[in-house]
Image (cartoon, rainbow, N blue to C red; front, side):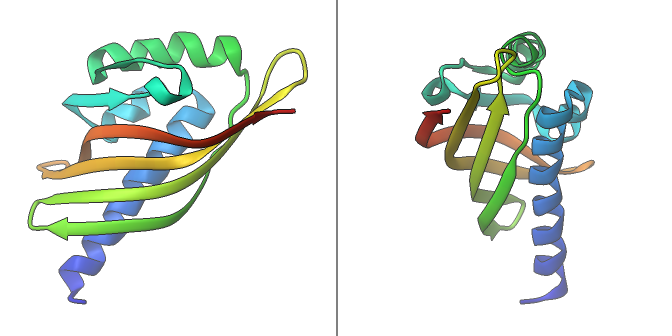
Length: 137
C-alpha cells in the first residue's frame, strides 16, 4: 500500500466519522463536510426518505431530535475500495437511540457510500443505509 492510498483511506474514514458525529450531536451543518451538494441519500429501510442532500439535511434536523433526543453510533469493519478519485465504502454500524419515553430503538446495518475526491477532500455523493436488524427495548 503506497502513502497516497494510506492517506486516502484515513481521509475517507474521517468522512464516515464526521457523518456519525454530526448525526449524533445534531451538528447538521457538519454534514456539509460529508456530502457533495448533489448527493443522493436513501434512508427508506429505516423508515426515512430517499432524496437529495438538500432535502435530507433539513429533514434530519426536524425528524431525528423529535423521535430520538439522543443518538449514538458505533462504526466497524470499513471495506474501502479506491479507484482513482472515486471510492466505495461499506461500513458496519450499530445505532442505539433512546426515545423520550425511555425505550431504546436499535439499528444494525451497513452504510454504503460512494465517494468522490473534491477540491475540499473526499465527500460522499451517495449513501444507502441498509438495515440488517432492528429492535426496540
